[in-house]
Image (tube, rainbow, N blue to C red):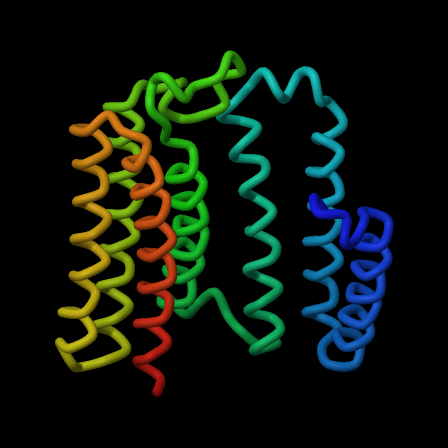
Length: 214
């Protein structure tokens, strides 16, 4: 878009085609999954409209971000219904995975909004601006440690090998190190390390769980 290769109107047209194909496939595959797709799309449209209270909601940083993250609530259930239309919440591992997936999204959200003091804007649209670097880092660490606890529980429930667990210590060590660097070194690289480590942690924990089924 920035290079002028394609414009917003053309993107919206392609998006409409993609959604049409997705809707048709879901209608034939699973009406239950289709219902959650409609709910997910409907909520995303409401979020796009700033929940019809743009000025009010924008001033409430934490509420605004939580409401936006709730988009993944519907998307995640849609994915469960798509892969297994007969899934049940009575399965404790599925429920834990649901919280795990939402928490990972929250991790990315917090990780990309940790900045240095001289990078903050007047809008104070980061967690570091609202909570301070120290408490924002504590929040960040609390999220990924909770995620790792859920990951470990699911991993040992699905596999009887320690190999994947030992591998998981690498992204855990990286994200802990990036948090310490962010708090200790005031340079342009530290916030990027935090964001990058959050993405690596997100991908690693999901992929390692997937490998238990290989």
